[in-house]
Image (cartoon, rainbow, N blue to C red; front, side):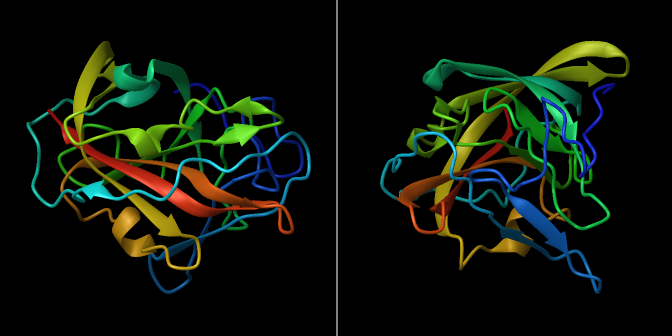
Length: 218
């Protein structure tokens, strides 16, 4: 994709580091591929607790149908009436993972698998809300196994639309995230769509949970 992620010092309108609400920060350990998420408070805007923690379905361990892998540019989740552009986000030298500042834009971590790849987890993430605006991923916790997700992008230079089916949704307290499982690049090809949720802690300025919706190509 031609869209470039912003630098730490001067985040662009589309992407920024995570000193923002519900921003996920990935820190890569020097001795391997383990990643951890931390959040930094943001006192701007109106915040509210999201739906209660929910766990349904399964984390995929069996591959879905063979699909074309794409350099993603858009996502659509019909059940949520949600549609958004996707921009590249990357791991900065500091170890933090960029997340689109605009809650209506989704980020794809370009250090992982492409959506539709045979192997590895493709990470898509975004704010649950920002400055009073609900994010396009704010209701992924309500998805059910069998719901569809479409990712659009380029495959061999041609615009391609890949269909995914949700296999499960997990709600993780931020102190107990299974980082290696979520970021696993040796897994079967799958999507992990991530945002924040659950109760909002006004003292720290953070949501207490991360919501992850898993999907495989259909």
